[in-house]
Image 1 (spheres, helix red, strand yellow):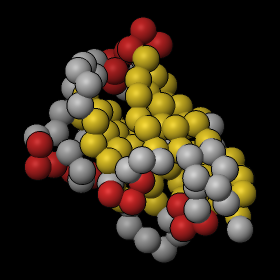
Image 2 (cartoon, helix red, strand yellow; image 1 turned 60 degrees about the vertical axis):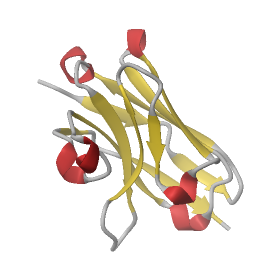
Image 3 (cartoon, helix red, strand yellow; image 1 turned 90 degrees about the horizontal axis):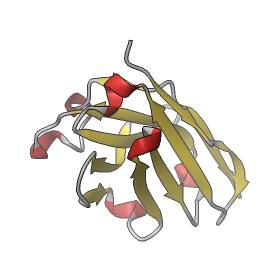
Image 4 (cartoon, helix red, strand yellow; image 1 turned 180 degrees about the vertical axis):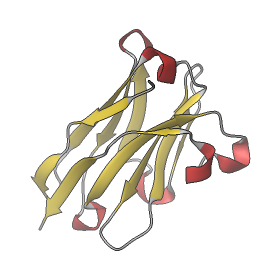
Amino acid sequence: QVQLVESGGGTVLTGASLNLSCTASKEAYNSYQLAWFRQAPGKEREFVATLKRHGTNTWYRDSVKGRFTVSRDNPKNTVYLQMNSLTPEETASYYCADGNPILSSQRTEGGYRVWGQGTQVTVSS
């Protein structure tokens, strides 16, 4: 069964950094693209960042550009999300997802087939 497992969440102060990890079973990691989404309480899930399994292209939501970096380690079947200068507004559960989205869908939940269980990030002021 395809699985994605996130880790690295926690409680930090405003301005701190966290590095999230998402390790996939081999079947999941054979997918074309991996992404990070987040969902705050009472809000819809939103796109954060994505990258393809091969190549150097990455995409970010505007509010995290310059602060977040998505990367991967293919031999380890792992994708990372380095988050710097965190703000309380970014408190959410962070999810990784994999799939084969077309370009117009890569920032939407519908573009991805498999989801992890999420890891909680809490940023306090």
